[in-house]
Length: 534
Image (cartoon, rainbow, N blue to C red; front, top):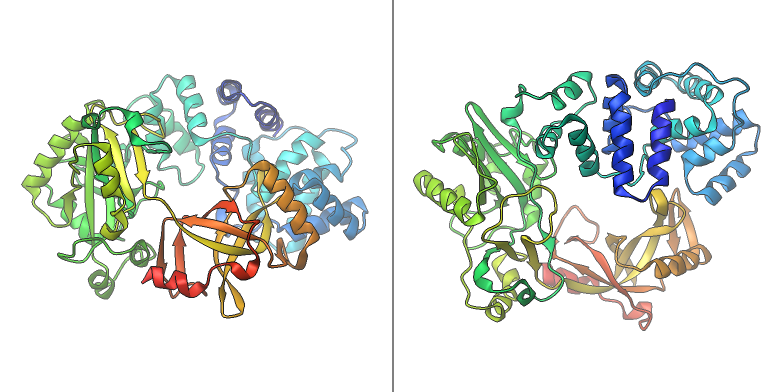
């Protein structure tokens, strides 16, 4: 635990990505493999035991630290509210041990102490945690508490960890990233396979790291001549890679999840492709010969079913609009120019000739002005705007700016009233930064969206003070506030939804501006949003 705590502190204190990467390299170079794989798991967003392992709730931790420290419950609560981070609060409220115990590695603490106690009776879990508090000095106790609260945020992205492992091993970072897509549990076997130099079992079922587009914020004519760019519709579905390698027929989502069994018609169609290939595209709900796809909410009914039955398959048919070819007959094509990859893809799909796997059409226009006019009609076509891809671009990994851009339609907007607020996470844990907004349904405000992005730091601080002074009720970490503040919200689409109390579901809501000029009774009506959704 001592080495991992030192790594955590080094990462937390640095704002330099180069320094953070150096710290990661130093740690992984000497860490025992059992510690290294758990460190990798935690640094890339994993939690001890996952969602099913109950080790300690926030309330239990506050209760146990009050008992162990001899402090009153109200003082623990006041300390927590002042500090804002539960792990840090727990570490500060206890004295350091008189004598430092023999150091145990990160893997030992998790596998020999925490996991065996998971889901045990409260007294058994309490004994394990309090024993650890009594053994560990403050710095290590703080990191131990982070394992319990699941809030290990130190400004380290998955990509940075992958770069560190690539530097350490000499492997290509794209291979590290590719293998990490199958990182489903922190085992020594996975870590050995991840860092191995030669081909590994399971490599054939792995996707390539996805190349992600950046949002185009200015005008497209800043990109130069339109002839240098390939324009495609920006589909509103699930980004997927279809993999056919030998007997493997696999669908991977951009969210690094295998979707085996959820779309059996696509898997069966992939088996008929005739050649091994890795195809990048968009999976959409689409009925027969209709001119545009169904809304994303229709596709959600398929995502939630691991083995859809005949009724679901008939009600929500799907297809893939393919827009890139990353591998063909075992040859990695990613360094070829996009226009070459697309030509090979078009030839492959022409031979395949299937309605379930189609080439995403290229949009031909003469100039950016004409493209802008066509983009304004995107919603009527069931799409979100344009993708702009440099014709000569290779297929990179991650979000590399310059070659691929998403030029989306202007967002739909409503003026909504803030009705609830919740504190943020990590460095924002002491501020109320997550907000719920409602629209008027008669004389009642009905929740329609949650949003946390779009305000400046100055506005967040001002709004945080206002929320604390105008709270009407508390529900755990959530505060109900006086319905007075109006905000303009932007979102990509709105669909009717029986799963939501409001009857509608908005896509990607965010705050556009604080409408200080509007009174709450001037906010929009829910009925207007329902009309847009029809």
